[in-house]
Structures are given as C-alpha cells and as structure tokens.
Length: 503
Image 1 (tube, rainbow, N blue to C red):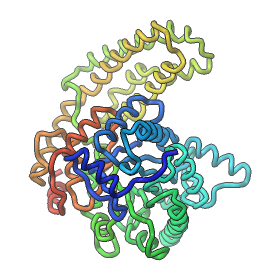
Image 2 (tube, rainbow, N blue to C red; image 1 turned 180 degrees about the horizontal axis):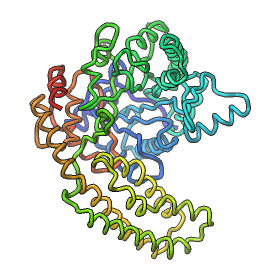
Image 3 (spheres, helix red, strand yellow; image 1 turned 180 degrees about the vertical axis):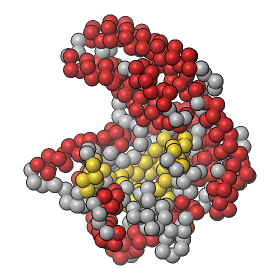
Image 4 (tube, one colour; image 1 turned 135 degrees about the vertical axis):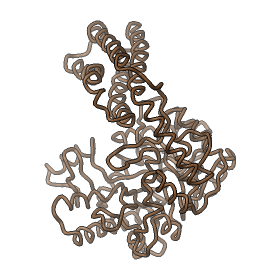
C-alpha cells in the first residue's frame, strides 16, 4: 500500500526540480501538473515497454497519470501501481509529486462477467444500463464503491487523487434507443449524477479520494444533442450538495478538428465549456488530442513514418514473406512447444496476419484507416501471442531465432502497407501544419504535427493538462521536447476560429 496523496507543494517541487517544463494548475485541486499527462488507455501490466515508458515519463517530470478501471480490463491500473510502487520504494519518486486519476462506469470483461453472475443470483447492480452485448454501464453508489475498492487495490494506493465518472452519457444513449422522452431522460440522468456525487462526497470524507468529477465525450457537443452533458448543471448539483464539495475536474475530447469546447457556447449562461470551467476554477483534462473524428473519418494528427510510393507488387511480396514466416512457426515450432490442441488453435488464430492482410489491404480508405486497423486490432493480437511465448516457451533457440526473423518481416510488411497511402497522408499533414501556422504564429514551426497539435491545446487558456498516449519511449521523448518549448497560455479564441475556417 502506497500511503499519502498528491499535494500542492509536492507537485510544484517536482516540476521545479525538472524545469523548465510547461505546467499548469489543475483547477481548484491546487495541484500543479505537467501540461501533458500520461494517458493509459492502451497500456497494460506485463508489457515491459509500457512500464519503461511510464517510468521514464515520471522520472523526467511528467506528473499526471490518467487511467481507468476498464482500460486493459484492469491491467492498466495494475501497471500504474507496479511502476509507482517500484519508483517510490526505490526513492526515485515521492507520492506527493504525482497526481493519479482513474475512472469508473463501464462493465466490460471481468466486470461484465461478474455483473451477469449477480443478475443470475437476483442481485444486479442498481441503475444498471444494459447497453449492448458485453457492455453495461453504471454509476450507482454501490457500483462506484466496488470499483473504487478494486482500483485502489490495483493501483496499490491508499488515496486516489481524482476519481471520475466515466462517460455517464451512456445512459442517455440507451434512453434514446429505448424511446425515453428527452425531458424524462435528462431528469433521470442528472438524478443519477447527483446520487453518484453524494456518494463520492462520502468517499472524500473517508479519505479514499481527494477530488471527483466527470469524463464525458458530450461536454462539448451542441446543447440540443440528446446526449449532451451540461457542465453548468453538473456544477449546480455539486453546489446543492455542499458549499465545500469536492467536484473539481472534468475531462473531455478536444483536438484540431473537434473544437466544441472552445468554440461552442453550449451552456445555459452562454459560455463554452472551457469558459465555464475557467470561471469555476475546474481542472480540465483533454483527451484524444491526436485522434480526431472529422465527419465519419478518423484523422490521426501525427506524421507518417513510411516511405511513399510503394507499389502493389511490393506489398504482395512483403505479405508473402510474412506468410512464409508464419508457416514456419505453425509447421515446425508450434508443435514443439507442447501446448494442447485448443491453445494451439487460439495461438494460430491470433498470430496469423498474412492472409487477412492479403484479403483486406486494398480496401483501406487511407493511411489513418490502415493505422487504426494496425494499432487497435492487428498489433495487440500479435503482441499478446509473443508475450505468451516469452512466458511459456523460454529457452528455445529455434523460437528465439524465429521471433527475431518474424519481427523483421512483419515490420517490412507493415511499412509497405503504410507506404501505399503515405504520399496522400504527408500532403494532408502539410496542409494541417500550414493552417496551424496561419491561425496562430505560436502554432507554427518545424516540429512534428503531433507536437503542434499538443501545443495548440496547452497554449489555450482553461486547459490544465493534455492526456497523451505515451506507450513507447520515443513518444515520451517527443512530448518532453514539446513541454520544453516556451509558449504562453492565453485566450486563443480568434486562433481557433481561424483554424476552423482553414482546416
């Protein structure tokens, strides 16, 4: 158990020690946090690369970690707990220096299985939202108490600095599907939030959390949207509970394309989300800074790293080399590992990528589509198999040699597929960077697009911390380089308006 919590003095001292590093106050929590935080959406325990990246980020001054109970089915919190425990025990880090944020609301994986068992016993969580197969949602106090207990155990923490309701608007989406009237749905939605807040005040009084809030994708949407979450109304709920309430942080999506938080005056008072948050001194965490949804398209705000102009023939050759390597594994190596037939079949189903790529690669709509398939579907499957092989088949020279060879042919195949769309992607990136430079002189420069996208956000008044996925040491290095670039945080409404016209 790691005792204590983040403190105003501890966070400031840590940042001063690692300065100059861009930082900002996290609203009324009084914590001082790095302008970019370590987003843990796609990290998990057992992946040494992720552990090294988090350790490097913390040791270099980044002092806000954002995770959730459902990230990696709890594995994300486990990794955070392991890294924190190691660094604090070794003296590399003090608990007071780092703000840890986690969230609850989703029932997936283990949570979903337990929920199904509770329902079979006739003891379901109250106010459960049966959103879809394999997915439920809940913010009832009974569920939140259960989830906070589990999160603290995985994180190895005595106290969580910030605990957020994770996308409570799932109830509103469910209500739309069920034909519930807008007025009734809104009334029930805010009743549930008030119920959750009253419970979280007791958790704060018991010392299990310091602050609470909401992470919602619908804070920035237009007010008439049936899934809109009104931060002004949420604030009023907290005020009605106590004049000394602990509602202190909101999290929402914002990026170069999704600019509602700064441009849409969707609050009853006529303010934008950022303006209202700044007025009430709420900490604002920005998620999805580099993954934008523009219309129905995913736009990745980062440079391409493949060579342009790859031919279809080269792609086919690379995929065939991958298929040949996978055939060697299946025919020669897998039979020698001594796994049963059921496990052998699962390994093959997860590993074999060549045939799927051969059939699908011509259908990718562009570089962003390909990268999404690669990062969210293909690589996690292959990584899972490799981690299993590391753990259960150590000492095999033949396996080790094959792994090295396979890594090379896989990398070549993936780069060739990216290269097909690289030229168009590079032109798109150049256009976005040109628009940034025209919108605001401080958003110009020779830096990578990912850095400029973070700069636009962190330089905007009202933004406390930009959450960036830093699963690799290279990503941590890129973020640190950006945070060492001096930029003034100010009201940049005119800049965002110009960017919206240009982009």
